[in-house]
Image 1 (cartoon, rainbow, N blue to C red):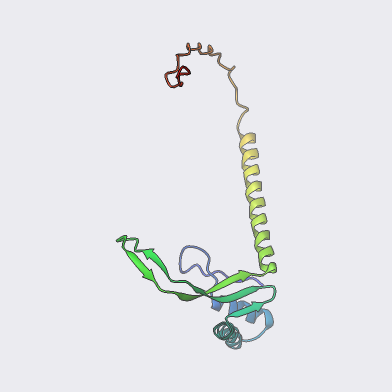
Image 2: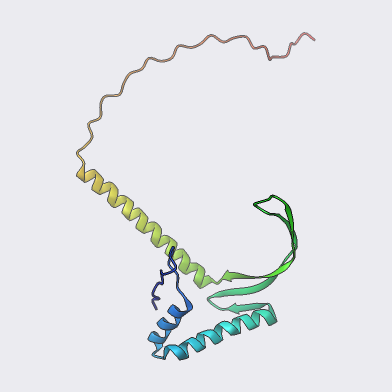
Length: 159
């Protein structure tokens, strides 16, 4: 399933819930209104489970978990004054094996594409330019050794 990309917000590519609903509705042949209701109910169920159980495991996707972040001391970046940050609950996400593997495949694909582009640039640059005429290496005289000066740092052995 391919999701259209909404770039109206500027910057990078953003896929919205609306894009997901549209792609799913086209894929399964259901109205967007009914599909939106199902997607929203799914999100609501995830949130309700997190609030109630503090953890939800979605096989092949990942694990959402509510954790308590301890109180800490921080600094206001503008003024440099110390600020007490109270403890709070945060939602963490650990991707599942399938998601991890698909992201790794994306990394490998991008690395291969970058290498192919680099190789094609190098080969096209080499084929479009005449072979460089390298001058003979210059001969420089070797530097003359400097006489070693007596060290003043060495401890005297006569004490």
